Amino acid sequence: MVTVTKSLLPILAIVLLFSTTVNAQGLVVGFYNKTCPNAETIIRDEVIDILKKAKTLAGPLLRMFFHDCFVNGCDGSVLLNGTKKDPAEKDSIPNLSLRGFSAIDKVKAKLEAACPKTVSCADIVAIVARDVVVLTNGPTWDVPTGRRDGNRSVSNDALFNLPPPFVSAQQALNQFYIPKGLNAKDQLVLSGGHTLGNSHCSSFTDRLYDFNKTKKADPRIEKYYKKKLEEKCKPNDQTTLVEMDPGSFLTFDNGYFKQLYKGRSLFFSDDTLLLDPINEAYIKRQAEGNDTTEFFNDFAASMIKMGNIQVLTGTQGEIRKHCALVN
Image (cartoon, rainbow, N blue to C red; front, side):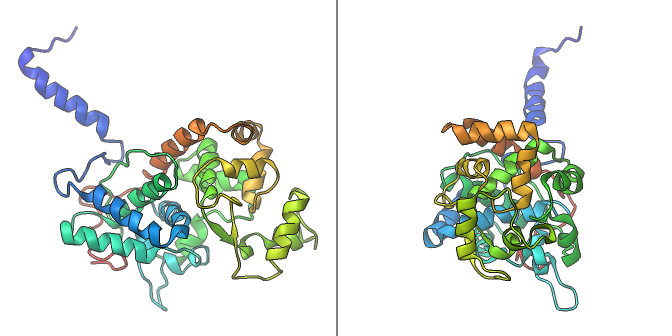
């Protein structure tokens, strides 16, 4: 038996507290408590202001976190500008429809005024993603922070690391999620983030007009929904936006699962989630009930897990002064 003297108890308590707040990647809840104690309040206030002026930015700002973490980890590299000679991640085809960069710049400017060269752009993206979910009636969670900003942003990295909407759920799981340390449950609940925002017709019109090169529609699309989509999206439409969770695209809820269970999902990668019996049972529970507790808890847990992907900490990377530029 190991005994601990009373004089060591305060030290042990500090050690235990530290060990429960720092995760394996070196991130910690409250990382800026001493260096920028109002950081999360500043971010939240700015996000409130941003969404008051542009409610539709909630989905894109959530999506930005996904697109950052899946490409070389959660390091803010999706924010970096490229050049004609060296295009960056944001110049890659999967990211051409990303919006909200100016919103992140606005948040960063406020933080720089309060705490210069302290809060990373990578952490801003992570906290903003949480805040847009909360402010659209979704769950909240403590965001582990302490990420540093990367200085590599290459267009092809995004092209080969972001799951496209036209692959099956199983392909996406094997090729994109599992290599990042995420599992089938993470894939399913993170896909529930499609309850917020819009998509361009070009991401799914193949399902309407030329599914699997058949010149026909995907038979899994519910007929009424298919008709509505065909009215909005003509072949080769590159500009029209369609709500991913019709009637509820500005609110974080379980409406996505209700639509998915009815055969009303835009993306092939989402629709084929139903082919897995475990996924189907989960989707059915969400679709047939109004209690969001299970989904909200699972989503928060998977967002924290995704936020750990290949993070830079300590002396790795840098803290950018401007999120679009390497120092």
